[in-house]
Length: 129
Image (cartoon, rainbow, N blue to C red):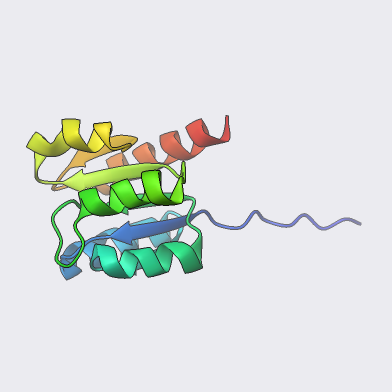
C-alpha cells in the first residue's frame, strides 16, 4: 500500500507594519492552509525573504526603515525574483507605481480574507502555468 504525501503548504511572506492587520490576516491565511512568515518592515522582510524563500509575497507600501516600493524594486531588480507579489495598501494612488515596479496584483485596505485568498490562489496558479 502506497501512502500519499500531502503537498507542503504554500509559503507566504507578509510584510505589514500594522500588528493588528498582521495578526488578523495571518490567522485567516493559516486557517486557509498557508504557511505564513511575517515582517513588520522592509528591512526585516529582506532577511525573511532570503531565509524563507516564499511562494508569494503580501506587501504593504508604507512602512518604516525600508518602504514597500523599495522592497519591491529590490526583489525585482536586485534579486531578480519573479515570485508573485500582491500589494495590500490603503494608498490606491500608488497602484500604477507598484505595477510599474513589478507588483502582480493590488488589493485596497481593508481587505476581505476571502478576496485575499482568491487573489493568492489566482497568482499562485498563474505562476505555476
